[in-house]
Length: 335
Length: 282
Image (cartoon, rainbow over all chains, first blue to last red; front, side, top):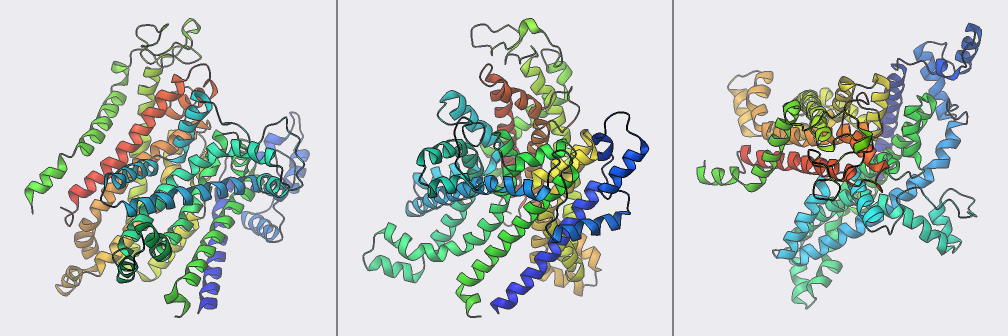
C-alpha cells in the first residue's frame, strides 16, 4: 500500500519534472535576444559566430537541442554558464547551501512562532488574547515576504541598527569552512563567534520569509486544536486533572498536527520561492540572488540549471511530505 | 434572505476602509496630471533629498520630500499608481479568465480534462513564482504588456485550483442532478447553474490577485525589469529608497506604506465581498 503510493508519486514527480524541463526550454528558446551576439567582441567574423553556436549546440533543431540538453541534465551535465564561464552544476551547488540554510532557519522560526501562538490561542480561546493573535496572524499573512523584508530593513537596519542587512557573513572574517553550509559547519566546529555573525546576517531575511508561513501554521493549527479539544479523549484527560496546557501539549497536539503538516509542505515550497527576492533585498549570496543576475545577463544555461534545481527541490519536498503524511496517518498506515 | 444581516455586513468598517483607500488611490492615479503637485520626472539638484513637510528644511509644495535627484516623492507615488493599477486590473482579469475557465472545466467534466489540467497545474507549481516572473519578463522584453502577460501566465493556477475544487463540490449537489434530469445540456448546466455559485470565490480571488499583481510589479521594477526606467513605479521608488536609506529614509518609507496599505486593502476588500455575495454565509 505504502510502496504502491510511493511508486505512483515518484512517477508523477518524474512527469512533472519533464514538464518543467519542457516549459523552461520553450520559454528560453522564445527569447528574442541572441546570447552569442552578446558574448562576442566587436568585429567578430561569421566564422567565429558559427564556431560559438556549434560549441553551445545552438545550430541544431529545437527538438535536438532539447534532448541533447535533457540527456546532459540527467547525467548531471548542466552546461557552462555564459556569463561566468564556469560549470553550471558547480555554480549551483556552490550557492544552494546558502539558500537551504536560510530556508531551514526560516522554517524552524515559522514552526516555532506559529506553533507557540496556536497553542496559546487555543488555550486562551474566546479571549482578547486569541483575538489579538488572530489580528496579528491576519496581518502577517496578508503582507508578502518582500514587504516584510523592507519593513525589517527599516526597523532593525536603520532605526535600531542591531542586525546586518546586507550579505551572508562579515567580509573581514577568516572562514575555515570546507563546505558551503557555513551555519551548520560553524556549529559543528564550535566556532560560535562565526555562528553568531552568520545568524546576525541571516535573521532579518529569515524572519521576512517566516512571518507569512508562521501565520498560516498558527491559524490552521489553532483551528484543529480547538476542534480536537472538544473530543471525548481530551475531555477525559481534563477530568483526570491535567492542566489545559498539559492537555494541549500531551493529548491534543499530536492529532491536530497532521492536517497542518500537509499544508506546511506546500507552503515551504512557497517560502523557498520567496528566497529569490528576499536574498536580493538583503544581498544574501544564495541561489536566488544568482538567478536574478543570470536573468539580467541573459545567461540561458545558468537560468535553466537554477530553475530546474528549484523545481527538483519543490517536488522532492512535496514527495517527502506526502510520504510523512502516509506514515503518520494511522488510517493510511494500516489501510 | 435576512436583509438586516446582509446590510450589517455590507457597511462593515473593513469594507469601507479598504474600498475607500482603493478608490482614493485609483482616482489619484487616473487624474494624476491634475492631482500631482509637481512633475514626477523633473529633476532639480538644488532640491535633492528634501525631507517631508513636518521636518525642518522641507520646501512647500514637496509634501513627502524629494529623492536623490530632487524629484517630488508624492508626485512619483501618484504617477506610479497608474502602472500599479493598470497591471493589477489587466493581469488579474487575464489570470482569472484563463484560470477560472480551466478550473470550471476540470472540476465539472472531470476525467481526462481534469487529469491534463491538473498535471499542468502541478508543473506550474514546481516553479518559484518570482523567478518565473523575472524569467518571463527577461524573455518577453521589459514593458507594460510583458509584465501583465507574465503575471497572468504565472498566476492563473491560483484561480484554477480553487475554482476546480469548488466546482467539484457543486457538481455533486442535488440541483445539478435535477437540472440534468430536466434535460439541460452539460455546458448549459456548467455555465447557468454551477458558475453563479462559484462567482463569490472568483470575486474574492480576483481582488486578492490584484494585490498580488501590484506586489509582483513592484518586485519586477525593484530589480529593474518592469517598464522603462523613466516612468515612476512603486518598486522603482523602493529600489531608490533602499540605496539612499541612510540619507533619506522617506524615499523608502512612503512607497512601502503605500504598497502595504494597498495590498491589505485588496485582500480585505475581497474577503468582505465574498462574505457579502456568498448565499450561504449571508
